[in-house]
Image (cartoon, rainbow, N blue to C red; front, side):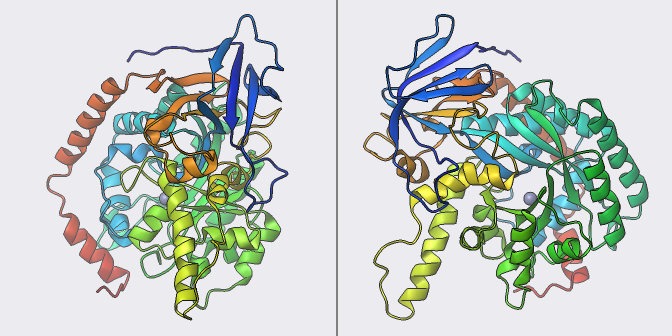
Length: 493
Ligand SMILES: [Zn+2]
């Protein structure tokens, strides 16, 4: 696959309209965009000044941003990047997904499938202006599956906190059994140890890909929780991310917040994805306080949470309670690869909820409680906070790593928007993402990805997807689903 390198010692972004939150802005603020020059040296933003004040670097790249918006790249806090290779399941519920994917299809995935799915998934992220992901890699079926995921991520140019899973792998679905878990645990933990020992968790020399832990052990196993989380912290593996759902569709995921807090395992390196159970009736409200006190965070994925029955998104409830929260797309096989819909779903769900509550008392809402800018923050600086890396990424500020997106402000979608925060949240798509810079390296230039040839990637992606289907030709997914409904004692309608 062909690749182009665009490394410049300096990059000057001239006269662009800058849209960013800074650490000084409140979470619900609506900052003003301003026209600036931005200078990048190596991997870092070294100056932001009024236009014309910075010297043009002699050996660097100069981009005229007169008709562009300059914004931080999105930080996706919950994404299963490799899943770009599996068949789409946009109409599935969460239990259907567990029965048909997690306990079944995932076991038919080869290491080569992982490589191409992971590569495609990283490129999809970059194409849409996502420069960083917390990658919950839950296909740790073997050492080579993990190695292929790392290789593809490294080749893509994306910044990734690659959270390798300590996960259960089903050996039988009826009855549901994980009776090989001792061997699986040994393989996965040895791999984590070996990766962590190489270069302090850096999986690439420039630190763009780092090692995290995804924890997906089925059921409640306090001893394994303690063993694995303690080991991760001993090895300085961060962040630690785990699914936490609740509700009738997500009963399989246990109530980890309280369990981990009571065991002294809940700390400021943890990210819980979804967190919908926090809204549930009868749920212990003190769990919110546990998150706030420890600095643990929520990664909300409102698009598939609403569609699959996870429960109502808790995004803005977390904002209101001062709990760190970011957004994610979860997986390309269920919904958009872009963060734009994630911001829209989060914001419009919350507005709809407030409007409906007021309408039920015959009251009209005078002003919306949350602006577009608040959703922009969730996709950028809020995501960096939730991933516990806000000192390095998530905003355009001097000293931060240069993860920058340039939007075409003359595009079909954006041409008449005067406010880039509103434009990016409500109108933009990947088509408007013109340039993407990660760690000071140009990876998308004038609308085209540079590191890999997408047409080559997609050929192999389709071959892999066809191979998975072929291997599963005799698998009756509906029968497996019925058996899981029976075993979970799920009341269906
Ligand atoms: Zn997930």
